[in-house]
Image 1 (cartoon, helix red, strand yellow):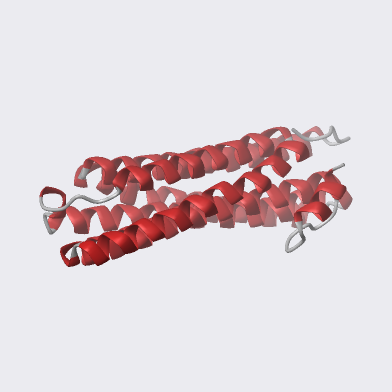
Image 2: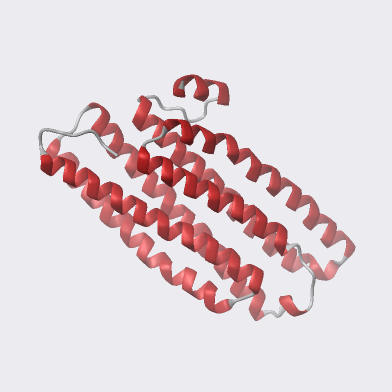
Length: 235
């Protein structure tokens, strides 16, 4: 994914960093998918697996950060390489927070299972599952764009984040209706509000990853800019 350098060792170090970022990305993507599967199936066992994976994700963040510091100190990179390393540092921070959101969902599942909600109440779990599928697909697309340093695909990720926001808004309206029609659903519905918000944040982190890819490729920080400005940078 990177240009060749005079130092083959530098190339190897950059490649190793990128590989570990993608490994971390694969782990957190799996966490999100498993967490929502646990919710849809009220599986405390799968929820526990998601929570246990969090330790490995955190460890990868620390290790990659350490390697980044070593490379910067040893190689003193400039221009595009320095942008890459800075963006990677921000990328793993976003990935670690995706893992946090997945673990938060898993803990909510454990709480719902322990209170027996699954056997008593009808809740819009399928809507939450659909929102999570959108978020997981967006995260996967952002990671693929990172692997290929594809600014155009990163732009598509930024555009598609709006779909997850729309799903979140619709789910909020549905949950409010559930709570108004049946007060017994209030506690569980509030839990689902936090789950839906966690999934919406996964989409936000995927968007953040996409912005970092554009920064690497184009050398322009597009954060907090309207979409038309981002499009002009990518073009």
